[in-house]
Image (cartoon, rainbow, N blue to C red; front, side, top):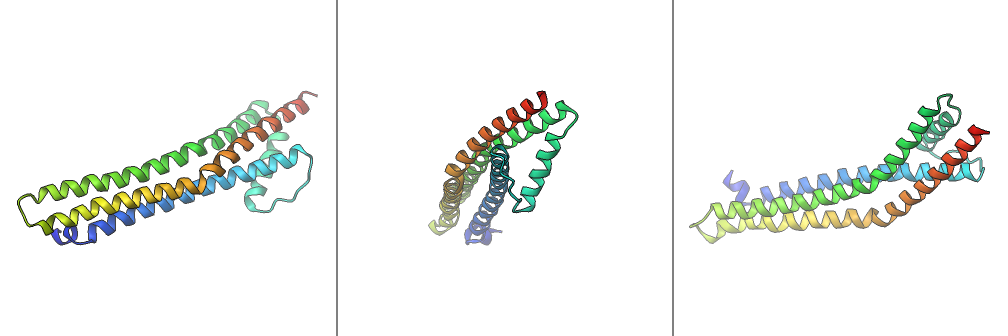
Length: 182
């Protein structure tokens, strides 16, 4: 176990874990942003009465959901469905914040663990202090780098698409309610 901590084993394992968390976060945010974009595009096309063919399975699913809402006999269910779309779109910014914060915290955890392990070797050779300190430095670098890349990849696009989705949802729902009242 000491060789694992003193060598690069623990450092590589912690950095690899941070990268796996980064990939999970990136995939989650990307999937949700793809959904928001597809919903925004579909609702926008319906608002301007353009009959566009769905380009993907996700777009077909959204088309079917919007059709179900438009033809629903139960107005409460339809309103609940529209509200669930709004909530899902609004949660996207929180999801990005969660993943970037988690990556930073994992980097900080590696720093604290590395410093704690190096303090556990008090009174010994200086070489024994360097292994855990490498863990402290490299996990911080990995956590911050992954957090920055994730944030830079999605932050601006995400805000713009969520805002557009919100506006299209409001307009589409108002149009739906007006048609139902007529």
